Amino acid sequence: MSVRLSVPAAWRTLLPGVDTDALTCEATTVGDALTWLTRAHPALGERLLHEGRIVAWTNVFIGEDNVRDLDGLRTPLPAAGATLTILPAMAGG
Image (cartoon, rainbow, N blue to C red; front, side, top):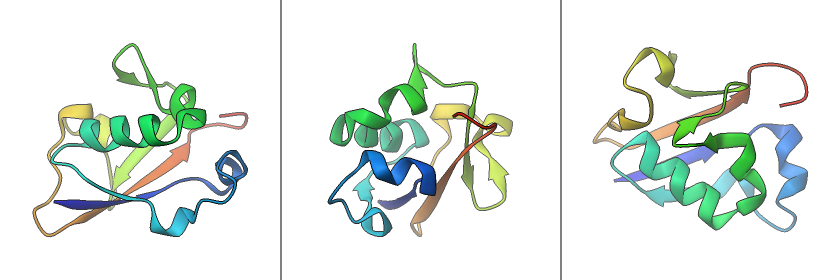
């Protein structure tokens, strides 16, 4: 299924020439989507994933739900398509 990835405005400078409003991939879980994003845009890697986990200063939401409160990277994506909203949890992230 197709998932849209919304990255923080502060991170968009790391993706010159990329239409960040159109970041989409095919994925079935949050982990699949974030893995795709870090492979497609390695500059985001250290801000998203570390040792198979979402880094401590980053939150990922499906709608109103933080995936940390669900099943983390194993959280399945809704069949109707989803938007993952990525937000730094604190300044400097």
